[in-house]
Image (tube, rainbow, N blue to C red; front, side):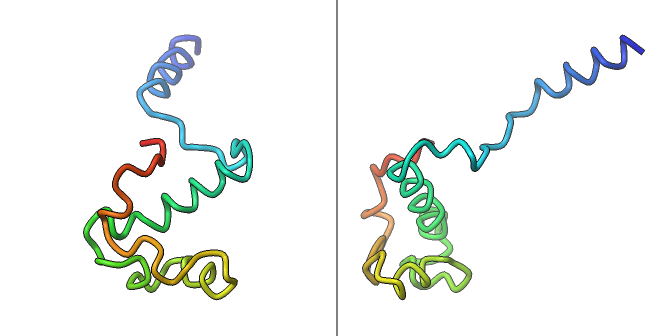
Length: 85
């Protein structure tokens, strides 16, 4: 039984733990996390502009007035952003 528990711990050490949403430290940290999510489709070449990705919460942020419609218009505007990668 002890050998099995030891093997399970060793296997668990191979995998990185996923980020926990409750570890967002403050509003600025949360905003960086959201920017990262919104910028991913552009960063990975799926679209040229964040607004072209139909499955994004970005559209809700624009509708609420929280982000301008031209935010993250291309990958160059997202390069150098500190998303913690």
